[in-house]
Image (cartoon, rainbow, N blue to C red; front, top):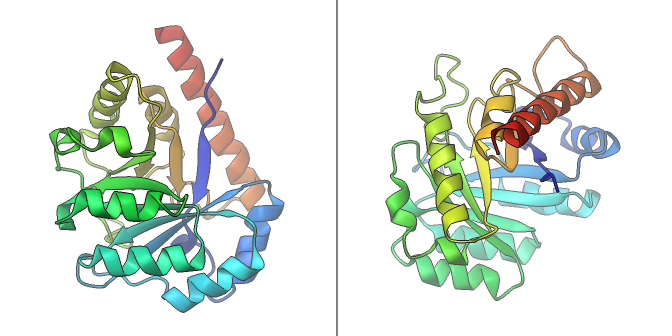
Length: 235
């Protein structure tokens, strides 16, 4: 049975002046997951959406909210997102003093939980928490610098995805691998082949200029199919 790959549009790449319209367009196009970055301006220099904005968005769409917290005070933002009623919360291990507490805080609410790793953070930090995670999010660029068009995906991106996929399989887990950062039309097939399950789609794929949303979705889906075929051939 071939696995399903989720396309998660990054809301920070949508039309921020017409958020509801943008979300409705994504929903109408058949996408069911929305990737939302929650950034404190300290851990990462960007600040795309405020808590109240996310709260208002929750009222106008049934899309799943996949929240990625990039902050130094994880517990505050975790609680705020739980209060809003999001579907998955991912937080960074690099800024977490009480990882198990945060994981349990999320899971006891029936919400999916993920941990995020910066590009150069080794997978060994997952040794004691991987079994508790629904998702591991691998940042493939430095978080929050996406607006710098010169920021390239790290050279070891595919290798890190492969290594994590092998680690998950070796433990017999069904933890999902999410990838974020220059997940471009050109790189999607390779990332899927390496083991990615959730693609955070932004300015280099779903919102790439020159094509309509539906055209970009078609190209992304074709790249996913190519990646899955490669995966099948390699078995």
